[in-house]
Length: 327
Image 1 (cartoon, rainbow, N blue to C red):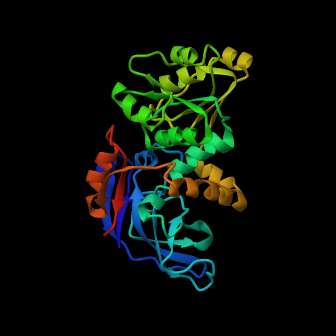
Image 2 (cartoon, rainbow, N blue to C red):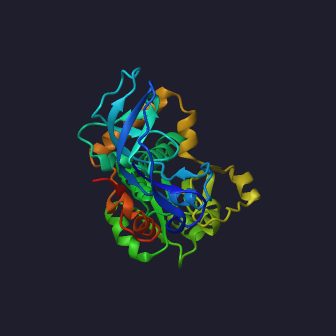
Image 3 (tube, helix red, strand yellow):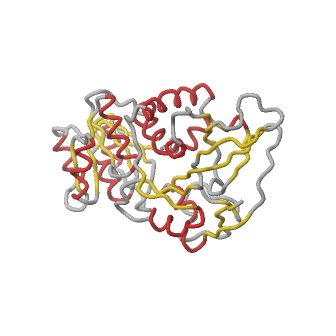
């Protein structure tokens, strides 16, 4: 089978190689999945560069998120069957044609959901839902500030705001993004290139500051967002695209009793009991099936065209997800 591998960390287009590996044989408690679609997420790029929270043991197969169909099942597997559309819940190795996964680490998806949509079900929709609905419990009518608002996850937060009635302040780097996000339902926009983020947040909120914020950028953007929190405000940092830290004013944090903390979907999924994961899927899948949260696809590349795919995935203003697919 084809597999996209790395033996050293660095720029994906420089360190990744296409290799031939044997198709894995499923153990008694495993299923063999023929993977068919894999989104290239920022976390994939950072992991290949050695800049992510988890570093795979080298040499390794790249990729985290994917979906496909079950090819074979192990002798002890009774809850799944060949031909089912599924998502493997594993921490790596999805940029290949087949993978063997324990049946307890596999989630079946509705027949009506496409494999491509299923492949994008975990990282962005579930992170957006968990941060806004479970961790922060954003109330109807409340303001939520977000950076990287033009990203796939950022757009899903805007879509969720229309479903659950909260309001969004959306930070982007380019004013050209305003029209697209406002058409999606964004309430307010801030251009970080020519506006002061803290000042604008306070203007929009009538001087109160924001009760909720989520940040994918860190650096100066995250620092200004933290300064724009209101009393008892909470900010979740789920990314660090700027690759520099967030600085908080301790006096402001003390007297406002504001909170800045991290959020990592992988850790949440590893700690959540099975019933909580089931509740999460039960909440998110209908939203995706109904088209209330969507993830547009900008381009599809075959596995052998991975270099063009990872270069495309690193470009700004892609207009959607980049997928690695199989014929």
